Length: 154
Image (cartoon, rainbow, N blue to C red; front, side):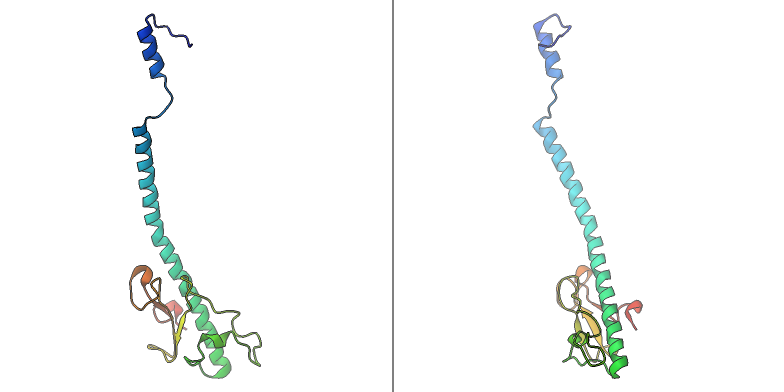
């Protein structure tokens, strides 16, 4: 038993009770609630960064596909038809046995980019339909094309 300077046994028990080193259930629940709220806030704030990074990645891919389409045009004096699609960029020809690009990229949501020729605002459209995979939308569901951003236009 530890030494206590208390003279009465009642004071000795109170002294021992004050020295406990455990947390109560209420204290533990309060800490868990606070940590859960912080984790939710962090998840909410980082989601917008994830969406922005996926959209930036899609813009880079669209730019690469547009450059490959321009290379195809320079070699063949025409753009691929909608029936030929983007697949013609990876198939070998006599001039380029390995194709213009190694493989077709998928958008950040793992869906192939759409190609339309003729395009609505130019000779062709390269389109990413966003997270929902359908036309229209805002935020993560926003559609991206080679005509949306001046940096994507060639």
